Image 1 (cartoon, rainbow, N blue to C red):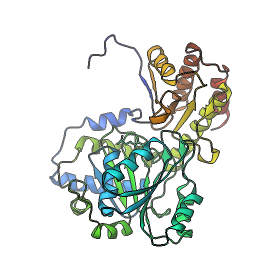
Image 2 (image 1 turned 90 degrees about the horizontal axis):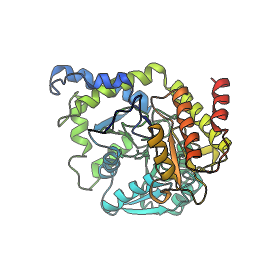
Image 3 (image 1 turned 30 degrees about the vertical axis):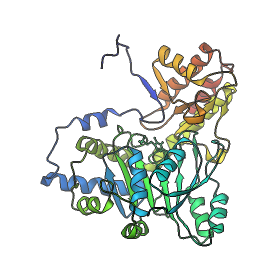
Amino acid sequence: MNTGAHRSGRHFLQIPGPTNLPDRIMRAMSRPLIDHRGPEFVEFTRSLLRRLRRVFKATGSIVVYPASGTGAWEAALVNTLSPKDRVLAFETGHFATLWKNVAVALGLEVDWVTGDWRHGVDPAAVEEKLSQDRQHRIKAVLVVHNETSIGATSQIAEIRKAIDLAHHPALFFVDSISSLGCTDYRHDDWGVDVTICGSQKGLMLPPGLSFNAISVKALEAAETARLAKSYWDWRPLLDSIEQGFFPYTPATSLLFGLDEALDMLLGEGLDQVFARHARWAEATRRAVGAWGLENLCANRQEYSNSTTAVLVPEGQNADTLREIIRKRFDMSLGTGLGRLKGKVFRIGHLGDFNDLSLAGTLSGIEMGLSLAGVAHEKAGVRAALDFLEIET
Ligand SMILES: *Cc1c(COP(=O)(O)O)cnc(C)c1O
């Protein structure tokens, strides 16, 4: 790709995914390919699955698709549900809306709880909806754990409790694409039936891999599910993955990267990984507050460890600001998605990142705010540094 004149230094890719690729992962992916049906592959696949289970905190089955996260959304639905089945879904933002659209396209009936794109899923609303469904027509509840478009993290343990309080048998599906490897996530403990994930956020990989972690209850549902499927069918994948193979050619290079990413995350320790994400998120919010700007997420309990969406004042265009920052400082920030276009910019603070990457990111934003003429106090970077200096 000829992008014109060389720019020195590294591009700051501060969108909430794909995230910055660690050198270790890039090197791992440049290994020569191996025979995916050869003996070496068996132990390789098994070791990936063993470590994936630790990261998902899941003891059951996990499948890996050479697909973006959207494919894993579809896989969760087609493997467990039948035409015209009802599912309950919540409008937390752009990604929840896209997942709902997949369900509609597959011929499912979606009970869609509208939202203001500033909050996660309200557990009380889950309990109320399910309690009203006395016939148990709702077969699955769909929740996006970290709604990346608004920077809000729903309380999955609380939502599980709400399902249980309603004594409802629905399956529970959670999109953990931008939370796994950033925020604590517990597939087993939280009674999640299918966890959907993708490679390009907290797992620090390029886009192109996605995952379903599957409960026993979901496997049982799969036996009678009648939605059409072929490529997404869990059965052939599970049969061969447990043997150490894939039923088709896997994305070998991405799996090499995954191997390295799992070593990095588990070597550092998941609790440490979550703690550093929480710390950068807090420093970012302090900067936003000191600039005098508003965090889009309206519930502090739901503040995201992965990404912060910042509202620009009325009359300003967030994309103009982003463009100025991209041109002047070689940094990409996340755009406002869907109905938030032009109204917010999003700061990705997840993945392969450190204090100085955050300091650089916030500095670029503060200078950009001046250049774009967005009214603000020049105090955000200082507030973030004060926090980073003291809190370890
Ligand atoms: C990034 C993201 C997706 C996107 O899936 P892709 O198909 O890989 O683009 C879905 N859900 C959430 C919550 C995300 O953050």
